[in-house]
Each structure stands twice: as C-alpha cells, then as structure tokens.
Length: 102
Image (tube, rainbow, N blue to C red; front, side):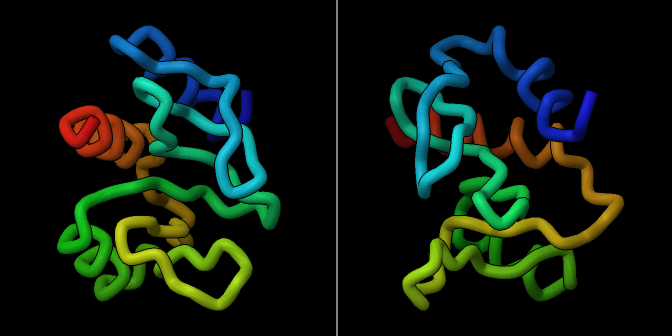
C-alpha cells in the first residue's frame, strides 16, 4: 500500500468523504464535494490547510506553496516535500479545515 492509499484508508469512512473526485487534474479526497488532499500529476502530496498553518509548514521546510501549473501559488495549499511528514495527520487537519468551511 502506498502512502496516499494509507491516507485514503484512514479517512474514507469520515462523514462526507469521497475518493472519486478530481481536482487540479488529479484524483483526491473530498468532503462534501470540496477537495482537501490529493497527489498531483507531478507526484506531489498536496493538502488544503489554513493559510497560517501552510505558511508555518513552508517556513519550517516541510513543503512549498502549491503551484497548480500556471505560476500562481495557492496560499491555502501545500505541496509536502518533507520525506518523513505524516501524510495521514496532515490529511486529518485538511479534512477538519475544509469540512468546517463547507
């Protein structure tokens, strides 16, 4: 089982979560129709988090602001680059953030 499959397994039974949707050209996890975690077409693990949390993670070297390919960095999306980052924990944070905003 790859890392993203472990994320899917950990969150697929949460209320409102689906795994069939696409976003930014990639399949990912959604809650109530809103994307919150996916692996990009470039193989980056990407999650949606509050701006402050993304900035903190970027500042600590754990990732970079996500660029979906048109040169505009997404301030609420992080492409995780730290090899030992806990993908499941980040997805849980993203789920709570996106679910709250829906």
